[in-house]
Image (cartoon, rainbow, N blue to C red):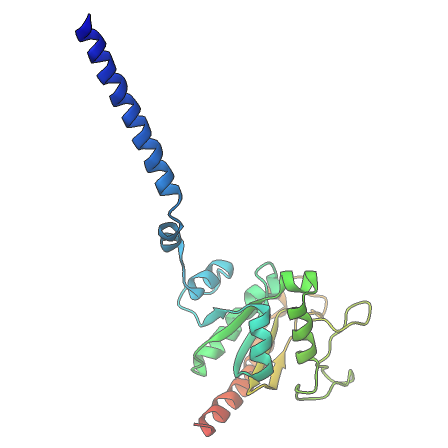
Length: 220
């Protein structure tokens, strides 16, 4: 009788110890975010390729917040692409942009997903609007030519996408937003971007990037 009691007692202790160890081990695994983050971390180029499947993972795009983008536009140098992955016109546009950037040997393209900031009209978005439509923008603000200013239905300036801005030391030297608002009645980007339009776009982008490269070299 005593032996049975002792055996049952030992068995109960073993079961309790096993359950306790299992629960502790499970809790320990749940509170290791560092390990999980290490396993799921991806580079900006890989992330961009996931957001824009027409671009390979070995690309030049680096993510920047709206606030960081405003700082680049205000006093930085480089190519800034503003868009968002849900924009079907952006999806094809980045292919042409990336081709030219590689050709011009640009080191990177700054990418800002503007969707949420524009939707919520954040301070960072308002700052980007002021910079893009301010005095540091080169070119005419006349609506008779290709205007730098774009307006919404209420007459307020608005950043439409896709939008590319090329800036050198805080001076905007080139912008392109050809399909950001007026698509000439075409329903898809594939229909719009015929050979002639692609050639013209790439020539404009080359010219703008060339100014950044030459100005940067002159300052070395």
